Amino acid sequence: MNILSIQSHVAYGHVGNASAVFPMQRLGHEVWPIHTVQFSNHTGYGAWKGRVFDGGMIEECVEGIEMRGVLGACDGVLSGYMGSSDIGEAILGSVARVKAANPQAKYCCDPVIGDVGRGVFVRPGIPEFMKARAVPSADVITPNHWELDYLSGCEARDLAATREAIAIVHALGPQVILVTSLHIDETPADCIDLVASDGGRLFRVRTPRLPVAVNGAGDAIAALFFVHWLESGSVSGALERASASVYGLLKRTADAKSREILTVTAQDEFVAPSHRFEVEAI
Figure (cartoon, rainbow, N blue to C red):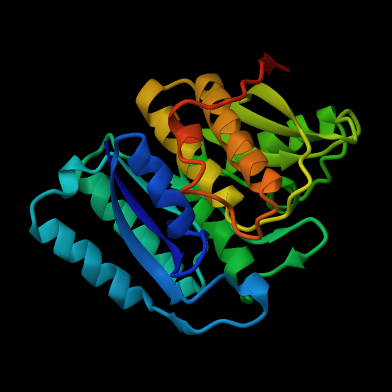
């Protein structure tokens, strides 16, 4: 498949496109990356160099791809951290151009807004843009637990509330929702849940909680889930494969006590995961 991936990028380490592109390539897909920022490293270090690009640059790159006559061969668009509403509008415009060229193409939006313990960490205006513009335009979204709460206006603290929150977000537009890190009352303290919904049919994978806190895991699982879903059309199958790969990736990272996610070192986890976890309908 051909995937247009519009995200941030770092030279050192693996977040944004630096986390999402290689796993998709390792699975045999062509990826057309467009960077919304080019930084030396992720901002979690507290200091970095580089610059943020503007929406015009994104539009120019997509126009250039269109001039090659290949936009109709694009199977999907993946977006992550947007940086500004200007960039967000350019991404949605790019999605529209791709879908005009190939009506079967799908859009996966990772609605990067905030996280548990941190709250909102994006620029003012982005949370509102995500809820009002990006999420309704997406076929697939991959929020974390905090972002699910924000988008739904609910607090998903148990399974019933989670189901309600997911239903509310489905009503905004997306057909498929993957909640990438869910910890509710029913989740054991030493585990983490991933929940995927296909129009309201919910599936869950429960994995052990690992002693690791690295950036980029969300970018990787969004990419993996999206391409597996595009290939198979199965939400439960995509959940099983993506969760297994990311668990293996994070376990290798934890075992090595690495501050950066080991995307290249653990690349075999993308094609032949060392751990498998049962998917259950809930």
